[in-house]
Image (cartoon, rainbow, N blue to C red; front, side, top):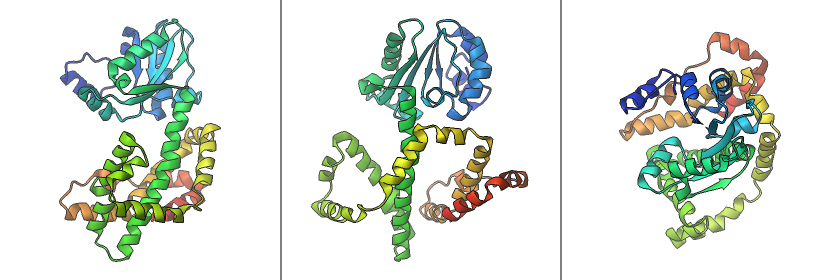
Length: 314
């Protein structure tokens, strides 16, 4: 089931039978709900819930909407979750290679009494059990996912930008700096080795000069208030403050404006220059649409807050 768009066309070209979402739900016994979190609740209420048969199993790929009570689940159905710790393309690639991938799985409702069997069969079918699955609640899955995005991701990004600007301000060529810091994909390889052999053990793949430098200088960062900020972020996620904020209409507008600011920061201009000089592909993030006059007017109530973001993304 899919709306009329390019993905439905691709499915048809791959010889899949395609239907409107409502029709697909009527026909199915098991449904994978692979929708973005931000539209899931509305689509579920309007196009899915009215057409569910008794005993249908619905599988969520994210615990967000169920975990934070954004969806009113009907009783006579099974509700399960298989949430891959992998993007969709990676799920398919790892299935084809037979490598598998980790997932978080859970059961919210077991109406038929065999939801566990269905969950395990589906998990095996998509290949995740070749690597492993951890059972948890829908909310715990959502909290872990959101914290990775809000607690760790921004901290890593800020450190990376600080390193880039430090080197460029010291006179090193932008092309060399960006290649050294991330465009060579050396860090991606290091992350892979962390997963393969362990966070500390992977250091053995580096020279002793590298190891000594990292370990002896790492202590200089010990007093940064990172953990305090992360604890605050985690609390906001756990108690629902973030969800309450994100579900407000004004937050969608806030997101659009913040994203526009982000595309105007100097790292994007620098990266565009470097990618152009190196003959690499440019992407449309540099062409993010600015807010309209009407949207700017609507955002007046959060103007002071937006000013902070504008300064942050200079």
